[in-house]
Length: 391
Ligand code: GDP
Image 1 (cartoon, helix red, strand yellow):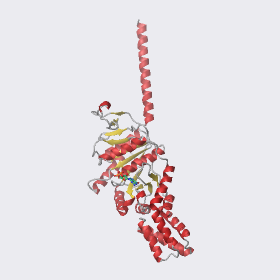
Image 2 (spheres, rainbow, N blue to C red):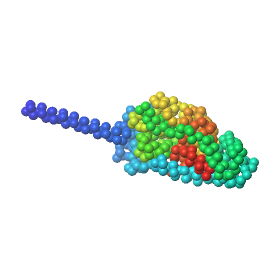
Image 3 (cartoon, rainbow, N blue to C red):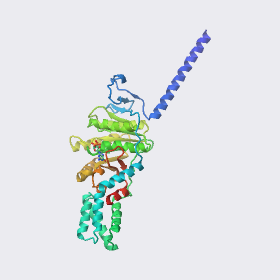
Image 4 (tube, rainbow, N blue to C red):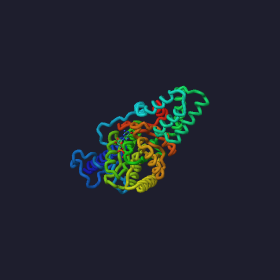
């Protein structure tokens, strides 16, 4: 009997080991496949069966990811994920849209240049047209002066030739040599950190969602951080963007939670998931400007305790002209902006703002928003842009 007992015990031990091994294997495979950490429900959260219909994804707290604000990892639960448009298709569509909204400038310039014999009045009109396109006084004067000199020196007033020169000069102002890449890959084995800042209403949260799609289309593993805790709906909005393309959002359920802690958790979560990039949305409105800037500085400081920030994108609404410029300068005082996202270029003939803002801030426009559609965000392409402006 003793022999049978020993055999039984041996079998039990072997079975337990085998099961444990299998469980571990399954856990590992699932962990890699979903790119997510082990998660658990926060204490007191309703069980799945108790949740109200339409309550959305159950909030789950990430193990060992937490900066004291009870941030949640909301795993995407969309059953059928959308496939975002590829960069190539995006560019072709957006080029056409940009041309549509900026043909007014092109037509005006063409009409002027076709008048023949470019007299003083014609040059003033060219100047006015460029100013109306928000090119800015400095760039406009520089451009018209260069063009006038060239017309004098080369002695041609053929509108097509002059238009070719205008194209060259404009392109030089837009500066095709600037590095417009957006950080989206791992750096030294850690995710790139992209912080997105800007005033409310400029399209900041929408841009974070659209940018996630651009990156997903390039097969990047993306994590979103909802550090706009000032506006409760912002985190929901961001989470929805994420769910559509299978990207997790790290957020707090609590309105008014500390944004720096949420941002910290987002970076830590992305690091643990071995993501390529974490994109962090921030608040654009506080009780006053100084408060907002102090908060942004804190967000930056706290993130930098665990990782360098690779990219700070400032979102500007292209339709706001000088006001947008002033906003940009305030933000520049608080964080080191590395790139600009110009939104709503579809709704304005003031495309010249690209030149203006680059000159004023000394950083490139990296992305442009050309509509409310999910894939209406594209990398900025200087040549296509100039062609769209001058027709
Ligand atoms: P936030 O307050 O800065 O986060 O702004 P939201 O992301 O909530 O966007 C404000 C509004 O601007 C929304 O209605 C967006 O659909 C709209 N929007 C954002 N980007 C663009 C764009 O490139 N073109 C147009 N036409 N609308 C945009």
